[in-house]
Image 1 (cartoon, one colour):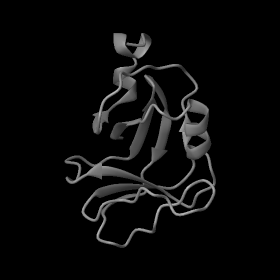
Image 2 (tube, one colour):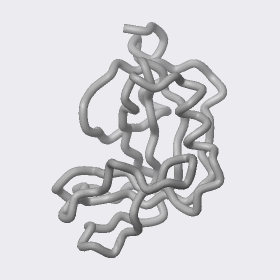
Image 3 (tube, one colour):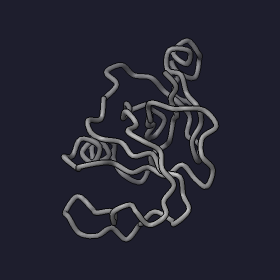
Length: 129
């Protein structure tokens, strides 16, 4: 199984991030940038303020050519933020699988390939940097 890791912006409290991720949306859409991942990926892991929260299974990866629905906020209104027209997107069905143990990872921009089993043994996984 291959996975990627993304960082959720730190301006939102962890409880609110988990509320968003466990909300009963039909699907979650996460941008991967302008390039399709070079490897097949099955999971999308998320960090927030230096801690790995958990993951989604990826349903499919698509390039947005206008076929994706408009993004909505928790209150149902159309979000101010929408996915750019040429971005590659991981489409993830619920549920979000929360990681029960405390595993840390430093913040970063974008995304990277990730293997939790290999990462657990590193110093960065055990100590918040």
